[in-house]
Image (cartoon, rainbow, N blue to C red; front, side, top):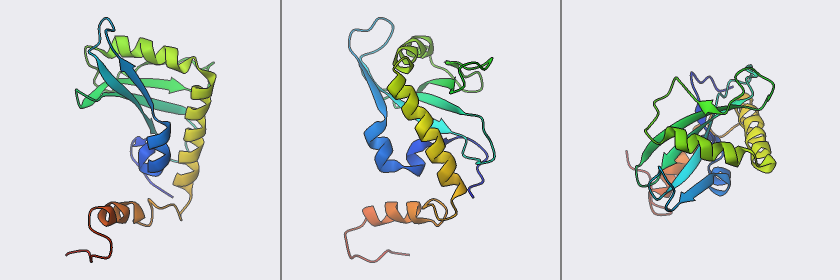
Length: 156
């Protein structure tokens, strides 16, 4: 079981799936936002004992190379703090309110909201599975393998 003290990006658990399923917003001429691609990066609390049923969506601007908004969202729509709202525990950029409004529109897509919830359960399942590749170090070894030519031994 993974013992994490904080939120973990979905891409850490499922890198290939995250590359294919991360929502990206592209703006051009949008009032209040620079022209850019904005990735909606998902972060989950992986403790399998926690049933928070939330995702933190960090909006990253490609050109800025930084998180510009952190948006909290609950899958339980009747909760008092269901969101989406700008997470007060994370820094927000001057573009955060505009990005929040765009994310609200994206979350109105039931298929996207369902995908986020499915990702939540995938992370919880992976965190509870002692055989998951994050636990046995293969995620770290996968990166090392990709950085050297095939068949070349690892140095040091």
